[in-house]
Image 1 (cartoon, helix red, strand yellow):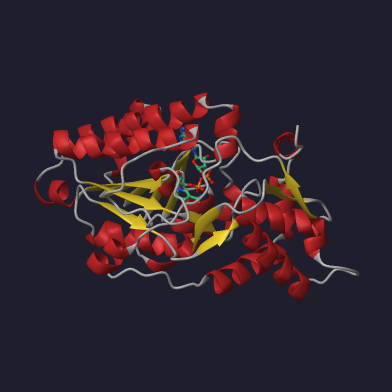
Image 2 (tube, protein in one colour; image 1 turned 60 degrees about the vertical axis):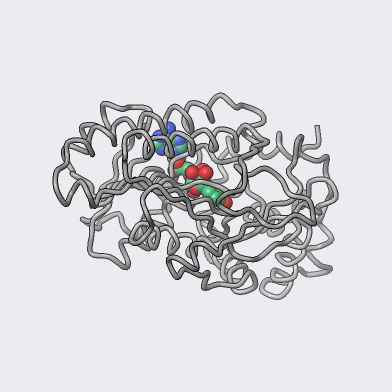
Length: 352
Ligand code: NAD
């Protein structure tokens, strides 16, 4: 069995679904079900006996102890986090609680469990920490992409809390010898992405006839990776990564935010044309996010060289699949767009 935290969120649920589709090994899915956790992401595995869902908080070390003792996982994959940069600007406390204290609590429970293992079970155990490229800070247009040795320089409360969690994970390897692995990945996109993030926000707003908000000049550059490619990278690192190592994961696919928005509008113009005009007509530039990092880019050569992983999707193929998924899943979208969600989106993008 593997133990997944945050498996009802965007990446975690994609991971759980692909794991159960490809592997005859059960998953304990441990998730607090915050606003970002959604059991509707997991309806297709609801009756699968290999999927055990437990609602709980990673800060609850005692519950984690009990679950590890009962289910004896061979690996812990840690996706759970507060993950939205804008929310971290409005309310950083939850980010420190979950991303820093919660990761610490999970590490402590994992260490006690791992200490009690023997022989092969102990040697083969892995703790895989899922992190972000945002810990490296921002790049100028001329800088080379981030490598695994780039110094950490997080700029938002979100990235600072993730950086802190990465350091704790690293320290548990150096201090206690725990077999940990860390992945630092660029921006993901794909199915089940909560529509507060750029790509699903643009798709859902465009279809609803609303403004398409673009921060500042829209020239911020991000690397984008289709979520299932991230999931295959995590599986590969779990299988063959060297304990104590970190692996950058990216799509070799730098795009400005404005060009992402243009591409989505063009795809929608093709797949679901408006009665008149283009979706591009709905684009509105709004006040930039404070401290907005200008450019992230990932050098993913280490994971390719050492573990033979490469993304399968290009941005064009991945984005087309993503837009089509949102067109095909209106019920999922309307369900997540509850009153609370809309209040948050109105606050965030109101330019106030
Ligand atoms: P998400 O916000 O969609 O999901 C997070 C999940 O964690 C939710 O299901 C939520 O209920 C759960 N959770 C939050 N606090 C919890 C707690 N205290 N205890 C238990 N569960 C809790 O996030 P995501 O986009 O799927 O990201 C998953 C991980 O990948 C995060 O660690 C994030 O930092 C990292 N990451 C994300 C991206 C991206 O582009 N989304 C890129 C690189 C890395």
